[in-house]
Image (cartoon, rainbow, N blue to C red):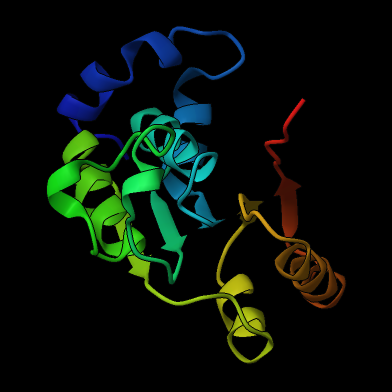
Length: 155
């Protein structure tokens, strides 16, 4: 069920034939894990939160460095040295207070991936290294959760 405020917030999406009220409720019930809160993960988080994804988990064990600030648009200078997952969680809650956001401030590893992945409908791979991508793919083959691989590359 959507509250009156949520219906107002998502009005433009609900009016789309491809979404409607039923689609918006599906978004509210969705559980998405974003692995990597960097240059790709930051804008993905913003858009998914604004769209009304009901549960977003943010997994990243890295801290914010000054070289991150020109491309990781959730972060600012006064947050240098803080954990990306924690700060991203705080910012996403400000974007949309109607959703549940969970910070997982650690790097992906084989011991925790299986448990964490199986609790989500979709895994969005926003990592920047092949070791993580291979691990995500390996876990996918076990849990069969939908995975979307994203990548930024130098041209």
